[in-house]
Amino acid sequence: MKRKLNATAIRNAKSKEKPFKLADGGGLYLEVKPSGGKFWRYRYRVMGKENIFAIGSLMDASLEEARKHHEAARKLVSKDIHPAHERKAEKERLALESKNTYKATRAPLDCPDTMPNQFPYHGIDVYCLATRKNTMLRKCC
Image (cartoon, rainbow, N blue to C red; front, side, top):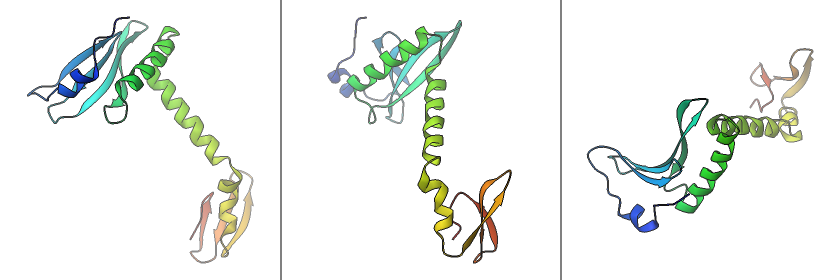
C-alpha cells in the first residue's frame, strides 16, 4: 500500500472554512476541522456497509502511531470485525478485570463505620453507620 502523507504535509495543513481530508492510503486519512482540530480516521466496509473508525487526534497519535492503529484495524476488518466494537469490548473487559481485584471488593469493609451484610443476590453489601445507607462495593464515607 502506497503511503502519501508525510510530517511536513500534516504540519502545513491549515484549517479552512469547511472540513477537509488528507488521504494517506488504505482508507486512513487525516480530517482537518474548521476549528483547527486534526483527527485520524479510518474508512472501511464490513458486510457491505461503510463505517468510519476514529483513531484519535493528531495530538494523541503521530503519523507512525496512526499507521500502526490502522494496520491493526485492517486486520480486524479482514475478519469482518468492527474495530470500534472491538475497542469497546476491550475497554469493558479491562473495567471488569479492575473491579474484580481484592482491593475493589474489600474496600467497603475498610471503613471503620461499616458492618458487612450478606445478601444472596448482592454479594458484598455494606451498611454505613455514619450515613445510615447501604452501599455496594465502594467506600461509603
